[in-house]
Length: 383
Image 1 (tube, rainbow, N blue to C red):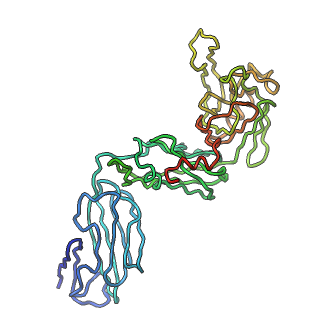
Image 2: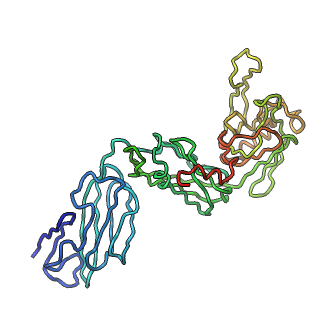
């Protein structure tokens, strides 16, 4: 005989059959309907995405709990000697979920299910960009992870708790909010070379504040290449490039002439940001005919700041390279050296320059390494 058992508020409908010892998935006649309870209850609607799924076994122990749905994969953990199970992450808004729980007691297995739907949020938060994001790209050991959202984040701590970075070779790191819609991850020391770093945002269902919920999860994979470090002395007019600690080449250059702050190459720890061949360079804030105006097309240009600094080919200044600084702030190198540098270097490679009194600002380009790590970590919403 099959009997539908129903319990009180919040209980879940269970199907039972007559006593058949040892048959999994069936209940003995007379078992209590609330032997296994699931919250939210079956048929519940408008469940808050940041709510918790909870399963309890009145008798015996929970053996298995699964949550199926079209949104984020919901995980959880057993507690109380497998008498309880609680979800440990948020759910996707506007999604149907089905919870199936199995409990065993004295050789009998009880199964309970609950199907419910989550609230469809009027406003959601999504990740619009994760940098680096070029398929197949290898990046340098200084590379940060830069995450941008489609709207300002009100509850930064809640969102930051949903972000996870897992390198093959662990190293301490921290997030730093540079704007209400952008957060950046930087390590305490450079990444170990030749490894994979995975980024995952369990954003779906996170209460981001102001009635905004995370729309969906996001993930990205970074491949860290060789440790390529460029060190240059602006007064000595030379820079040396190493890969994994071994010298590759010493390159003579001509840096900024230093006549003004604008024409002074910045000292400090920079990261290589992008490449262009060719790149048209113009004097900032000047129009054609103004004193100091220039417009020059250069080849094999590798950018290392937002203030217009590049390593690039400059055949017109080969005679000064290695002996004098005559540029507008870039590192002018020979066509052959420029092509070699362009072909060799990766985004996120480190270029450390010394020799001028103009320090690069930490937010000028990707010069985040200018901040000591303890100050960088102060930009986290969790510290």
